[in-house]
Image (cartoon, rainbow, N blue to C red; front, top):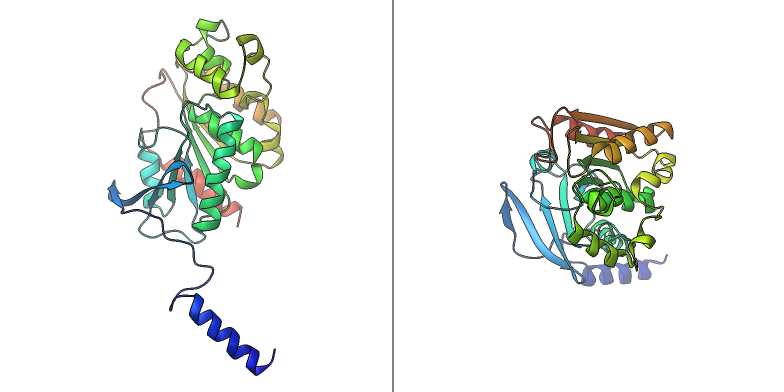
Length: 280
């Protein structure tokens, strides 16, 4: 490079890059921040998707983040603890899609924005609470290379169990006729008969995660009448262990579907921290 070329390049960079910034700097999160548990919360759009990001006071190196599958702010003790520990917390609203291929596609657009535009870690940790388990596990199976670890809390891992359940004679739980109809539409199933043989429910699609050694943490009550553990979390635990995938669990004796979470959320924080350390 000649001296003249160097001067021209320097002048160009001075013009296009604001003083004190780097070309690789992530964009700031849009919108006027509000407060969420004492932290700055940004609500904005990614394309047509409604997004939420909570920013820690002191982000960890590499800007790791956890991604809520559903029900932002519900039973959020572990979410708060993770933000305090330096993790960003994110959520994108794609309701009534039950982790379907449509949902996974929309999650792809959100992930691209978070990792490319806003500079968050390429591999988020996933928090799958209740039906959020379908979103998180289906994303992880489709994109194990873009998944750090998955924490499941009384999570739906088979839509036959919920919302199918006893109303559809597909499981032992309470189920929901109304939510089943929404699920059929989300997956473009024309009938119950088309839905029931589906082979990509999380309980049936664990091999991609196990091959990638994605860590799973399962927390569940053993008296869950909504999302029965024997048809969901326990089945995932047994099958994932058999496949050689890294998995641990915390069983809450006598607990129903609610309340979610743990009284002491330290095991969840340690789970994600260990997964992050392993990826370094």
